[in-house]
Length: 292
Image 1: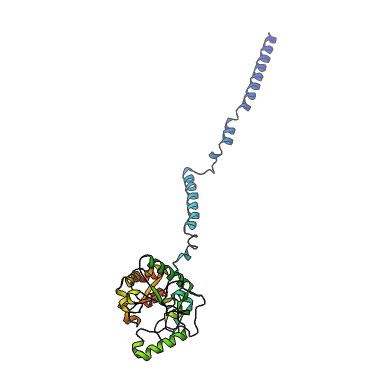
Image 2 (image 1 turned 180 degrees about the vertical axis):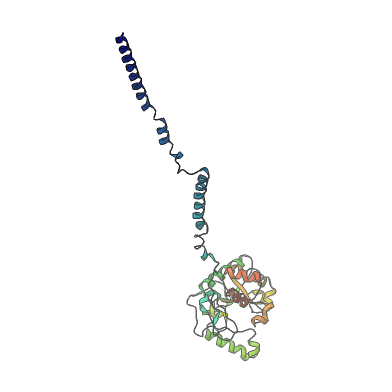
């Protein structure tokens, strides 16, 4: 009877031992929680909350805006500073101690107050290829090259329009003006001569940029009645298109100090001649305002 009991006890022990072995083999198959922790580092306690995420998301944007603002504040604006308007022609004095500024070239101002040096003579004088009256000889047919080409164009177009004009006197040296002015003073007295003739050094003819013209309708004389002729009116209406102005207008006799001379043309270039014509003012006033 004892043997069966011992056998039963041994069998029960064997069964229990087998069951324990089975449970230990199942445990290593459950690393799920550990794997989940490794795969989701965002669940770490140090991870930012959703509010922190928003701050960090907005912060870079603010930094980018801050960094871009200095660029918009126009570092390029510094190079743009030199864009301030500058005069087309550098401002220069019109005269120095009563002597004309020769650097003004075709814009030289010569009048009763401003004179040319006694020894001044343009270096580019050429003979103007136009019709002259017989009494105009030698240097009196010459002008500065640019002015000579301009008067040639004017005369050519005038002839094409049926306007008969001839040159009577162009360049005059200082020495020639001395002889001419003294003759006028002897004939009419200095006060009267000063109204139509310039003292030596004060004549625009010495610049090589002036020329007197006339027509057959007034027997090629230098007379104010030229302004009432077809030829005189054509000059008044078209001279500026070629760079010339009728220098001494009737309306400005007091300002210029010279009587009306519809025959006296002065070259200043087309740009300025057109402006003087449009403004309808004496050249003295125009150049003074232009050079301010």
